[in-house]
Length: 369
Image (cartoon, rainbow, N blue to C red; front, side, top):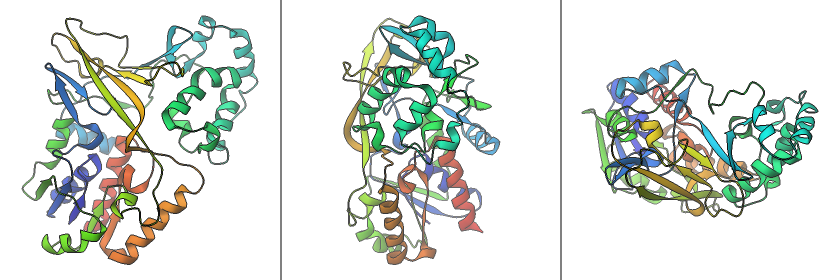
C-alpha cells in the first residue's frame, strides 16, 4: 500500500495495516512525520508547533489504541477568553454573565432561546444565523463574530454552520471544561505527540519516506516503483491535483513561539482566546499546562491567522461540490478500486484527532477485507 501523508491519519492507516500483516510505504513531503500535531522544543520546553491539540474521544477503541502506543495523562482542557479586559471561560458560562456589562440583557436573550435545538439547525443555517439563534446578538458580537472574522478571513454569514455544534456553546450548568468526552488527555512522555507518531510507525512492515513528494502526475510511477496496488490519500486533493479543478479555500495559521524564562506558567490556561479585532493574534498557547513538563521557564505560542497553509477547510456553499469533483476525478484517473481517502485534508472536513484515527482504521480494515 502507498500512503500519502504522515500525519495522524496516514500513520494510523499504516499501523493498522501492519498489525494485520500488510506492508505499506508512507510518503511525507516534510522532513519529519506528525503533520499538525508535531511538537518541538524551545530552550528545553516542549510546545506544539501548530497550536494546541487535546486528545478527547468517546470511542473506546481509539482511546485504547492511542494509550497502547504511548501513555496519556488525565489532562482536562480549559480555555479562557479575553472579554472586556477580563479573562472569562469558553464555552460561555452563565456565572460569567455577572462579570460583564449588560448582563441582564444577555440573560434575557439566552432565556428566550432555551427552546432552540442548535444541532437540528446546523445543516440549515449559516454560521452567523446559528450563533444568533443560540446565544443572541450581544454574546455573538462580543465572543464570536470578531474571532470568526479573524480566524476565517470572511464574514460569518458566508460560513457553513455544520461544524458549529462541536466548537461553539453556552453552558447552563457552569461546567468549565471545553470537552465532555469520557476519555481525555495529553501524551505523558517527553516527546509529546511525536512519541505517539513514532510509535504508530514503529513496525518492520512500515517504511517512511520523508522529504518525498507525490502528486497525481507522479502517482502511477510511484505506485509502480513501490509495487503498491492501492494508494491512500490523506493529503489535500486540490494541491495533489495541482488545482486542476480550481483551488479549494483553506485557512492557514502561523504560530510564533516565545520563551519566557523562570516562570512555571505565564498564563492561567493552556489556551487563551483573544476575539477582539484590536489584537493581531487570535490565541495564545502554553503547552506546559497540558504536558505537565517539569522544567525552568515556559513557551507561549502566539497564533496568527491568515498565513499560507492548509490547516482548516473553509466550508461554504460550493466547496463541498468542488471537493467531491476532485474525488471523482481521482477515481476516474487512478481507478475507484485503487484509491482511498481519509483524514481532515483528504475529506475536506473539520475533524478532531479521534475522528481522523477512526477514519484511518475503517479505511485500513476495508482494504484488508
